[in-house]
Image (cartoon, rainbow, N blue to C red):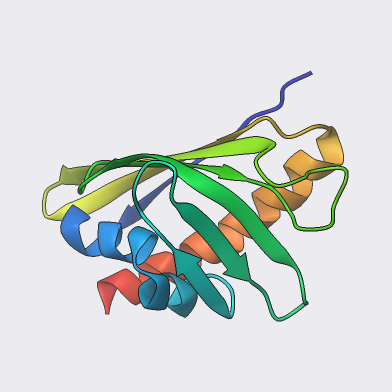
Length: 134
């Protein structure tokens, strides 16, 4: 069974701008979650708190300025998808002044997790595109 979801979007902003929205705590919380605590270096913390009370936890494994970010992903107090149990890779490529963002979320344990996370990423990536383009 596939354990990976993939998304691609075009954002009307340069990769440098989009990268900031992936690695800066205040900028990330503009489009994803209520607050974030990010340490964007390999081994650094990735933490996002949501209005629902849920908290996504993981750590950065790759931070390549303006081109690639990889972090582990999971949910605090969730045995089904615990912190660090899945991985999110985001790549950025400039294309005619815009950014092509590719997201690959792997290691999700079942079809329901793929569906729920796919819907979540669709929602949040649309918010990222709006914020970065503003």
